[in-house]
Amino acid sequence: MFVIFLKEVNIFLSSLIAYLVIGCFLGMSGLVLWVFPDTNVLEYGFAEMDVFFKYAPYLFLLLVPSITMRSFSEEKKNGTLDILLTSPVSEEAIIGAKYLSGVFLILLALAPSIIFYASLSFLAYPTGNIDTGAIIGSYIGLLLLGSVFASIGIFCSSCTESQIVAFIITCLLCFFFYEGFESLSRIDVWKNYSLWMEKLGIVSHYHFISKGIIDIADILYFMSIIFLFLLATKISLSFQK
Image (tube, rainbow, N blue to C red):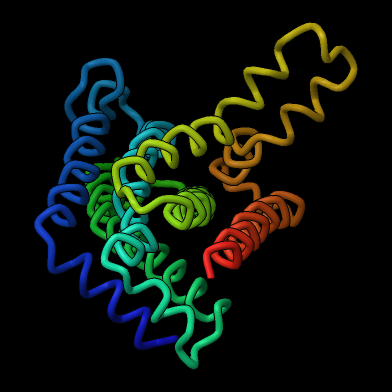
């Protein structure tokens, strides 16, 4: 399992697209936080990273599919999937290794954004006057969100041999789970069930955690979605033996 994990990480980091995608994510995050007039913290006047955590999920809609799109699609295209599935390593270990490599790469992409926190802490008056606890909670929420997106991406990659198709489907599914249920909940037809419909989506759970409120119910929600998509990946692969 660890060998597959290292292989996935090395393959991604050895490609130019890895640095391009991560660079775009950090570049756009920096522009939102420091440059764009409607969002930059210098004009806002408060040492907060709320705007970063507000827009980062939308940047994740491009970052995460770029990381996961080749997981199984490339194996199918190169004809190595059958060899991998008949190896002594179990399906669960293969899926777990590819999934964890995706989560690790998301964490790697997020790590440099700590510079934003350090800069804000230095610029705050007095120095260090920043809500560190809330920011840590927000990072946890963002990592959980990325982990859910990664599980969706792994599933989509297992369904097609085209990386482009996997990328597009992952983007659409991630967007639906993030915004779709909340949008559907606003339709009058649901009436008394609108709150339940909203709770099916990611956005309400993410917003609570991004405020620094760590609720076990929200954690269980994220874990459940991850489990369901990894299970769906196993089912998808079982049909391809």
